[in-house]
Amino acid sequence: MPRQRARLARAMGAAVLAASMAAPVLPASTPPTRPRPHGNDTPPPGVSLYHRPTLKELQARTALHSPSPRLRGLAALEQAATTDNPAAPAAVPCIGDGALGNRVQMIYARSSLVTDRYPSLLASFRQWAGDFDQATWLSAAETGGGRHLRFVTDESCQLEVARVLLTPAGEASFDVMRTELQALGHNRTDRKYLVWVDAATGICGLGEVYDDQRPTTSNWNNTGPMYARVDAPCWHYAELHEIFHTLGAVQPDTPHHSAARHCTDEADVMCYDDDAGGPVTMTTTCPPEHEALLDCGHDDYFSTNPPAGNYLASHWNTATSSFLAPATGAQPARLTLAGATTITYGGHATLSGRLTDQQTGNGISGRPVNLWSQPATTAGWQHAATATTGPDGTFHLAPAPTATTAYRASFAGSDQHATADSAQVTVGVRTKVTARKSASTIRHGQAITLTGTVSPNHAGQKVYLQRLVDGAWKTAATATLTSTSGYTLRATPPTKGRLTYRAYKSADRDHAASGSANQTINVT
Image (cartoon, rainbow, N blue to C red):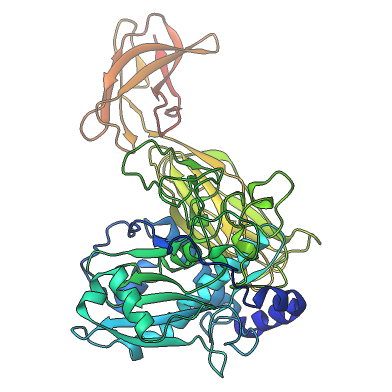
């Protein structure tokens, strides 16, 4: 089913509740202060805020191999969307007539000094908005519900992106931009405005938010106008983050609040260390790619069903915002991964798993499952492979790790099912130790010599010559591996007879201990 049609069905399935949430609810009095934008958000790793990227550059960095967990998560959402409907990009849902009620209005803005890229960017803008809406819907599914962003759409149910010309001052300043937008009529109390600014003047993303924790429809974050902007270096990266600022995330008294309206329990789209080395301490609870989704733990700013005692049961909860539409939620899914083992360097592990509907136990077929790896001495996760589930939901992978590696699998959801993550499994990797003996038979009193290599290269580490004595290995000599990871070990057997030796490399941080094939020596 094409994504847009599926989303229309979701929205229609929750029409009654949607009507109650969509009606503009205006507070009875004037807010004490104007909402203020939080501090400028940080861009993806390696991205300059002073370079205006091309569309090709933006598309290339949204990849499963990106160093940014959020971009990896967005790439997985796009991968899932392509599986749902290869012929059509992600699209926003049809909600009512596309105009009435509280809505999120998207705007493309540039200064008179910048070439107009609106025609070439419009299709991408619409796809990106579809990605962010899918992230919202999948996030709602984590607490058993469904939510869509109430975008302004046109008569064809396509995302409406207004076109605005700013002065150079408006391009460079959030406050000036805000004033200019209001003068142009973008000042409705039933609108949140997210502006794609085609500029690279040092801004990643900024969004207004009120300090208002009241769990009622009169919360100041439940009205407009409120403004957010994302400049070109952070397109298809910061939009959902800024939109949710305008919806009221993250309040300063939440359980995991940071110093500047963000959260500290990674990974989710609103969490990062924002106090420049200050006292904020970050924790990690959710998988890294969850950074493309909302509220890890669902106890700070977004939950469709907060239990008693949860902060959101008694404080402002963006999931109740009238700028969101309730919808039928995704069905929960379950993902398993098995195959923990130890292999020798140069070999392959065998990992297998199954993706199932959590309620029925039936396999979910034809869906991409991503495998992520983290070698023992590496801090971050990286994409290792993608498998497609078979008719019964099973998948198989054969990675060839070069060091002991942790693996986990993830499913980025679909139009029917929610996201799912497997438990981690570890594949140990032992070094490969080769050995060649100098002779098969020697006289008593002569030395035995073993030569060989240890792979991968462990130059400077120790390797041991060991003799089997009464079922236990005893060290007879030690050598230091050369720059090419080679060794020469020499020892004089203490007795006559048929003796068994081996070369042995002990375990280190990223490889398990291993020995060479046994070498039998006849001592006469």
